[in-house]
Every structure is written in structure tokens, then in C-alpha cells.
Image (cartoon, rainbow, N blue to C red; front, side, top):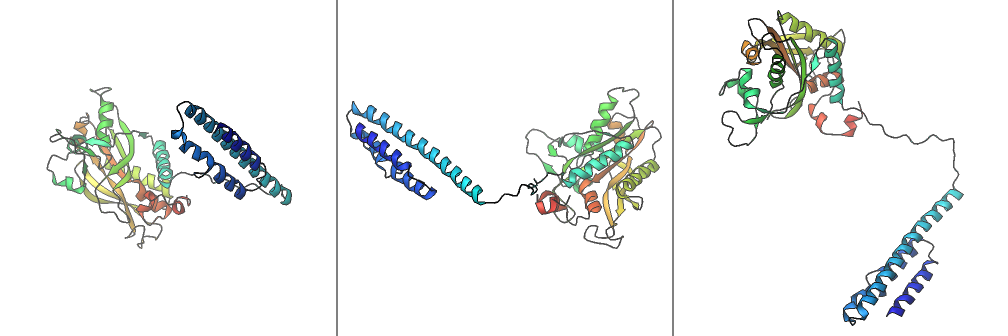
Length: 351
């Protein structure tokens, strides 16, 4: 059988020299390395050999198989090169043609609008502060003047985490970036508890709410929180800051309005709207009514100031929270907030 294997190897290698195309190469592979080939039959007959012959024949069969597989790979590469040479010899190559351009990556519209907002608020003296997305009930609600059982909690349909043993302080996915206000104030107040420094920060991040998804609502979205705390800060400072932000982002023609509202962590509170310049205030798919609600705002509630380590008798402050995708919808004329998360290249390549 050893002689038979050697003859089989010689025969296969000789036949391989005459293979000139891929179809013939595949036929050669089936004949000499396929399941029904004589070489594969030898492997099946090893159990019938004596103990003395079995290792010798098995080793020789493996050597022949490895040799033929190496020769097959080498011949396949040779045929590929021959085909390429034939194509180049018959094909005219115009070396003056420009090369094929590579598709360039680009920033997501959400990232673009966030960077614009960062730059605008940085120029107005705000710093960026980031806080965690998994929060406690205490920071997300209680320290922001949402006591346990307060009806205003129903405004924010919450994703709670199933972590046993938390009692009245369960873990949750934050429903707004406002818990960052407490984190930021406490971090600064710890530097000098008797006379904490002023605060001027923006707090960007993802938030989560169990809401009905439609053209202007999503279950997860970016918010940009703003917080300014110091002596003598008034509601006029809040209005001036947000109106200036709108003019810098959308142009001097941008019109804004404040509508009285209610939030437990600010008093007084107001919704901040920007007139839709896609339709001129007439109502369209982007705004719905001529004005697009960007977010809430107001003067920081004394309870929140106190929980953050600031004496409300000495300090006042304002806060606001924007829906970043809402701003991008208005700026870029995007009719549906769901486009931001669908990862559709037809949408993304427009930016």
C-alpha cells in the first residue's frame, strides 16, 4: 500500500501540470482529494491493517494528502496570475484616468449639533460636566424636589432596574440630565463648603423614558442640561442666555418665546420654544404648530439649591434642559426624530 500511495502522488502531480483553468482544477481536486478519491479510501481502510502497517501507511497517507493540498493551492494561485496577465495583455489601460474615490466617514447629525452647542455655551463661559446614566431615585427625583409619591413623577415614565433590597431608593435609567445638577453643585460645594464657588455648566447626556414613539418622541434621546448658580442671578439672565443661544445657532432672525409651565425643581418655570423657520410659524411636519418646544427652564428651586450645598438665601440660579434631537430637527429640517436611530445611510449621508 505504501507503493500505491507513492504512485498515486506521482500520478496526481503529473496530472496537475496539465491543468489550465479553474474547472479542470476543480475536477482534479475531486478526483484526487474528494471524498470518493482513492486517497480518502486508504484512510478508511487503515482499521483493516495490522498494528505494524497501520502507523506507516497512515503517516504516508497524511504526507501525500498534505503534498497534494499544497500543490493545489500553488496551482490555483498560478492560474489566477495567468488569468490576470491575459487580461492585462488584451486590455488597454488609461493611466490618466482618476482613481476611484473612497467613501469618507462623517459625523452623525446628533454629534454635529452637540458640538455646535458646546462651542456656543463655551463662548458664554459654561463648562461641560458629565454624570452617569444609571441613577438612584434619590438623585433623579428626591433631591430635585420630587418626593416619593409626588404626582409630578408621572410626567416622566421611568425605566426602573430590578435590583432587590433598594427600598425607596431604587436604581433607574435617568429620565433627565437634571440629576447632574446635584452632582455638579455638590462637587463644587465640597471645595469650599462655607463659600461655594459660582456654577456655570452644561451637562449633556442620554436619557430614557417609556414613551409612545412618534415623529417627535423617542424612548431614548440626548438632552443638554444647563445650570448657572451665583449671587444675584435672575430670570432675565435665563431669558438672555437662551435667546442668545438661539440666535447664535439659528441666526439673528430666530424668534423665541417662553410659556409658563411647572417643574418641581424650578420656580418659576417655563417652556422654551423656537419659531419654526422651515414653515415661518404656519405649522409643518417638523414643528406641528409653528413653534417647536425645545425644552424646559426656570429658576432653580430653593430646595434643590440647598440639596446641592448652596444656601438659597445667598445664591440664586437658573437651569434649562434641551432635547438635542429637537434642535437638530429644526436646524436641518428633519421631519421625524426616529431617523436619528435607524442608521439609514440614505439619511446619514445628507450630513
